[in-house]
Each structure stands twice: as structure tokens, then as C-alpha cells.
Length: 527
Image (cartoon, rainbow, N blue to C red; front, top):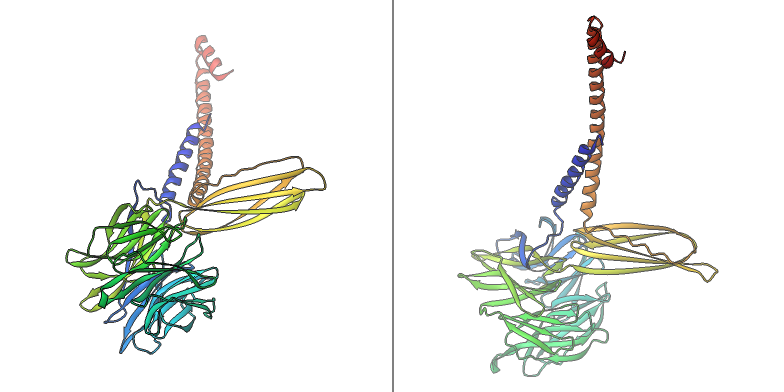
């Protein structure tokens, strides 16, 4: 075993190098013992010396979009910032002044690779802009628009309107080119004014929920109001008046169809898909308003503003789906910091949200990137089935997923021939991808009609690890090559020394006339 030591050394080198390179990957998944919230970066933007504020965040084509407003002489105007989602670095800005004085963008969503946003003012606006902020389309919508979402290729713009002196919920259905398809206007209640703040579509029932509040100062009424609408027919399905004081600001859903609603005060309420109240909790913080929320796996994330230590501060809470509190984190420091309605955006375990700081009347944008650590991994499954004739099958499969997302790709190929024999091959691959990665797999199989064969291939759960091992293997091969060359040179040198040693002894022995020494010389010199 002439190179046993060198081979063991190279194996150790491969393991060490692979471990170092995998740990150096900035997008690798991290395993945490308990769920928590980690601040990845914070960015500030102060475009004017007056009032500037962001409302919502969206992510499109690896570009983080933040919408809101900034101040100009005589009023405010629409403002959108495009940022790098990994560092928060500003890439581009877009501003637009409709000319009515005080305009801003309340909310945004993504559909078909475009960002759609709604702006307040009267009339209100809806706009479409590309992720690079290089082109846009803008149109008017009715009422006062406050929220936007998308479902089945359509946009739904929520807000409120006035009908015969009564303020009611209003939702407009638009196509991708911002043309109005249908409009829903609720009947409301004649003794109150209804204001809608958020719309969302339940992924299980496909019904649209609009949440807000109703008020009547003369009667001391200020409480949550919820309307469920069929987005196809744009007709009312159900009205919910849960009797919760204050304003409902946001609604979001889990994969089982449960709705979560947050708002004024410290209430978080869970409804089933039929609109029945399942659970209501109070966080026990009187000076708290929650404006934004969503789910990371099975964890509920809500954010807002809370008075703490003499300042209003940005804060985020983490709960399980049964609304058991896990923990919270204060995000801002010794400055008054506020939020308002508009989406936070969730991408894998990452959470992007925006608020603003108030420094003596000069308010500035604050954008956060957070990670919910210890969150369950999201799993998606795709199935592809192809029927071909007997022969060779090459099937390219392209998979694109975003960080800490497990994709299980199952390809089933059925080969048929004019005979009763059928051969079926099933190939299963599991890929865990960090950041945003596009992987193209070409599945090539040559099968003869001779029965059933099942091939299962498991691809590791870290693409970076494969690269690291490949590089480490190349390095190890070079080390083995060098060691072999070195070993051959050393052995050649040793052989030369041995020959020189024997020749020197033989030369000296032949000059000594002693029989014993001569015999010794013959044995040593083989003469």
C-alpha cells in the first residue's frame, strides 16, 4: 500500500475543503433550534425635507419594490423604489405627480411579471410598472382605492365609495391592461360609514374577503366590518360583523383556508373558510396597532407600531397558526417610527416590510429585510407524464425555486408497443435550492419492452455542496498526482544510493584478502 497515507490525507482534504466552501455560501439554509426573527438589513431613504412615507413592498424578478410617496412643493407625489433584495441597495426610482396635490401609493401586488399599485386621491389611480421602473401605464378607478390583489389573471382593487350619502365598500375587477371588467358596491349599513382597507382571496374557496371598519361617531360606533364576495360574479356572499372594536387593517390566509385579520389595538382573529370566528386573542399591549401580516410556513408574522420607552417603535410579532405567541422583536430605536396599511412581502423565510421615521417633521422611508429562522420548509410537487414509443427518451425539466424551498420532481414515462407488454419508468428527484436558482435537468433513458423498471435518484439538498465537492475532488486529484511524482522521485533516489553503497563496499572488499570478509562481500555484492 505505497500511497495509503497520501490517499487518507487527500480524503481528509476533500472533506475539509467541501465543508469550508459550503459554509461560506451566503444563501445556504440555516437550522435553528427555535423559531425567531433575525434582521438581515435596514435601509433608509429621505427624498425630501418634508413628509415621505412608504406603504407596501412587493418582489418581482429579483427586484424589491417599495411604493409610497414623497413631498414636492405644494403637495405629495407617487414614489416607487426598486432595490436589491439581498442587500437593500437602491437600483432605481420612479415618481409621478398626477397634479391634484396630495397623492400616494397605498398598496401593490405582482402579476405576470409586472407590479400593479393603487394610489389614493379622488379620483383614485391604478398603475402597472415593470420591475426596472422603465415603463408604466396609469388609469383612474372609481372611489377611494386602498388595496389591490390578484387572482386567476385578474386584479381586484378594493376601497370605498359614496352612494346616496352613505359610505360603502367598493371592489373593481380589472384585466391585466387595467380595463374594468366588473364592479362590486356593497349596500353597507344605513347607520354607519364603511371603510375598506384590505382585500385578499382565500386560496381554498376562491372567495374574496374585504376587511375594514364601520363607524358612526354620533352613536359611538367604531368596529370591524368584513364582506365576502364571489370574484367571478362580483356579488356578496356574506357580511361579518364580529363586534370587535377599532379598525381591521389586513387579511391573509393559510393553506387550509383559515383567514387571519389584524387591526387597531392588539387583536388577532382567526376565521374558518366559511367566515366563522374560530379564535380571538389579545396580545396585552394597549398602545399597539397591527397593519401588516402573512405566514412563513406554519408561523404567523404580524407587524405594526407600539409605544415603548417614550417612542413609537416598529415591532414584529411571531405566533403559531393557533395564535399562540412565540415572541416579538422591536425593530426601531430612539425615534418615533410608524407604519400604515399596505402589504409586507414574504419570500421563503424572508420578510420585507416598510415604515417611516419621524425626525422633527422630516419623515423618511425605512425598509427592512428580516428572516424568520426555524420556520418550516415549504414543499412543492410537480408531476410530468409522457407517453412515447419504444426507444430513447430525453426529457428536459427546468425547475426554478427560491431559497429554502424543497422541490420534488417526479417524471413518469410510459413506453407502449404493439404488444401487451408495457414498461413504466418512474424517476424521482428531490432538490433543495438556495436563493433563486434555475436548474435544467435532462432525463435520458433507453428502455426495452421487457417488464417494469423503477429508477430512483436522490439529488442532495444543497447545490452549493455539489460544487464544493467537485472543486475539492479536483484539488485532491492534483495533490495525489504531485504525491505520486514525489514518491517516484524519492524511490529512484533511494535505489541509486543503495547501488552506490553496494558498489563502494564491493570495491573495498575486493582489496581485502580475508576469506570471511570476501564471503561477506560476495553475499552483499552478489558476486
